[in-house]
Length: 211
Image (cartoon, rainbow, N blue to C red):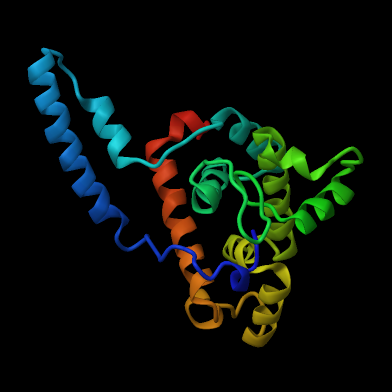
């Protein structure tokens, strides 16, 4: 949620290496669980394998609720949370807070637009409020870019002002291409990671997310 320039130390792109890493982790999990099963005399290890090869998911009830309320794909919300915080409540050095890493300025903007008259910044530590505000902002950005979710994801990372400028330089939303028109390497990686994670959540957590 904070600007790309304020988050220089962000982790590198995982989308291209995730599946190879998942395979390695899954193999290790299978071997480890198999040994444990033999020693302990227990049987099925399918659950352990599933845990190893999928992304973490928490607060799926809130995600489903907010997805329905904001007309969003719940897998998109989950993917943004994973990319922003790995489902851990935290505050960045730039002041972005909570699961969806919402900056104070963005939180105030959302509160004004959504009628959150009693909102205080400390509320962002509450998963219900944080996911509600992050989902509201995703919906706002998607609408701002005429339904273009790629641009909305980019703006969630780099800021609306930056993406508006890039879209203008590209010649409009229809002409925009992420690989060519996003100048920030971090934001290109962010879009790639969120897109890949979204597909992983849809594949592995369809029931949990109500898909």
